[in-house]
Image: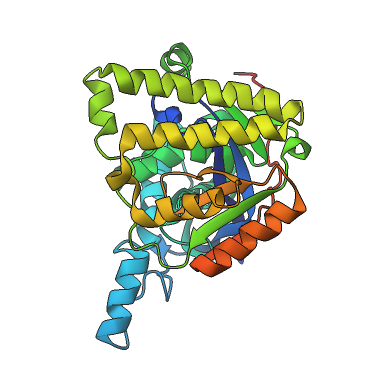
Length: 349
């Protein structure tokens, strides 16, 4: 048996502007979050095996309280199901492209420190890392292009009933900071959007805020998708407006205009609140926004809820105030570290 041992790391992500319009032919800016990551390890094996994580896939609990706390915080699904779904999608994609996989097999295992149910794309990080392992093990990276890979990760998650858009998977494949255009013409012609890497130096100091126990994360997607398909004018107008936030945000970043960026972040959240409603957003998520706004920091969701990203355009005194406010409310507040660029996205699509 070969001693092949491959480990691939994929970072969490922050949706900076434009989300959730990536699912509605919009535009977004997202960045890779180096603070948290998932790793998948592939070892050569005589069969296809999936090693359960002792914590996230564990089947043993010391008490009823431990059982309840684990399910409330982690949910019912661990990471093994993501590994299985990604393998199934990889197999189908290879068959579709006429790639004959050799008779060699593997064991997959994973580790993650991405907070669960925090809107940081922890599930897709595991799936994406698994895909990277498979591409390397079978040496088929040249047959499945970089621009196709986010769609495969999304497909794997959809296999499990996870509702999401391409934004998270794009930035986790490319890394760094990515501007994404998902306009309808591009998506229908190509099956993917147009992606451009931005200079990470344009990102001002940002703060990630999340709750240790996100028990009330709301129902962030609510009935918006249904209302979209029904042609509700307000929802269609909102998604178009979200896209303009990304366009204007890119200009603000490149001009180093933190005040303009802060205004766009707040407007992104306010529009989301108006379209989704407070019940869908969840009390804890709203409390985190309120905490940031208490010191006049700009804030919005990183994804579908569970964590927020904040900007303090007034500098260090405001940042100290934000950290103090979060400490009083029991929220975790850490400086954002932008993850490395893995592939160059240059609007070549």
